Amino acid sequence: MHRIALLPKHCQTLAPATLIIWIWSAACAPPAALAANSVDEVPGKAAYRYYCYQCHGYSGDANTLATSYLDPAPRDFTAFTIESLPTERMVDAVRNGRDGTAMVRFSTVLNDEEISDVVDYIQKSFMIGESLNEKYHSIENGWVNHERYASAFPYIQGTIAIDTPWEELDADQQRGKQLYESSCVTCHDQANSGSREVVWELRAVSYPRKHFSHRADLPDLISGASPYAMHDVPTTPDNMSQQQSRGMRLYQDNCAFCHAADGTGKNWIGSFLEPRPRDFTAADFTLLSTPLALRELIKGGIPASSMPAWRAVLADSQIDDIIAYMQTAFAAQ
Image (cartoon, rainbow, N blue to C red; front, side, top):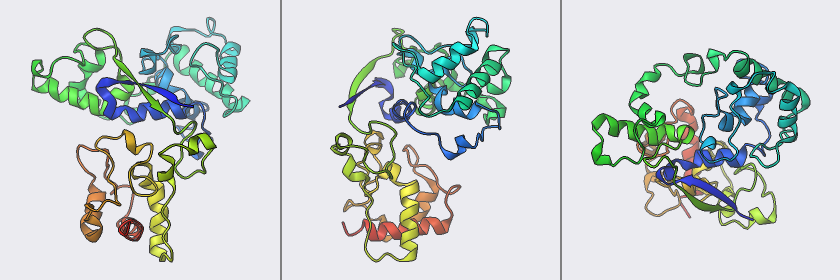
């Protein structure tokens, strides 16, 4: 069985986040943070932001990428009152889904109390006088000085078409387009091309079929037949030291998602990134012999790539543990 992913041609290098959301959203169990209801301790808010926002939006207005290609479109909760969209109808939709729409049933991942909390959160936040704190780009939600992204606003608002020829854009508009395509498009992409249509292409994806985890056992024989599956098997050297064992755990938790469990970067996620994640097993990857230089690269990240800076996530000693594991796991391949 294959999934067919619809991807906008102008953001193919950015599509993984969007695609992953669609594959994960209806099938996976909530993380520990969700179970603990950690988002401002408001009942239903964490579940909404984990399961619902990608279609219905952080502000409940369905101004999302999903709206540009789902038919019927996700519901705009701000256009309804409790009288026009009764509680029992909403609870039933969350619990059982809606045939003929992209609204799936959530009774497999949310219990009755959690479903009730989600509906109550939607009603209070979006239908009974919208809460300013629910605006995604608010200071309360961590978006301090949002105006620094102002050069990208015209592409989000549709006042400049995303397919406007590069040479017709001035320097600020070019910066805005680069910012939009690198940071904003996966959430804000709408029909803002010159033709007012989003251009899509079909891409077949055979793995994962449900919630993806490079740490989990293969879910079934069909997914196991994927060419990506072999790269999600961790490389486990014999007779590892304590440092290397720590490094292996840290690598699998932090690095394998992009670089693959076997260090090749040829896993499912890595296949979508551009530029591709580094293949640590390649003969031309010589940084394993210069651990201090490799540590600084991991700490600082790589501009114009999906490699982030890890200095705020991992201590130097943890990075050293990872490198020690990489040296024994990948250098000899």
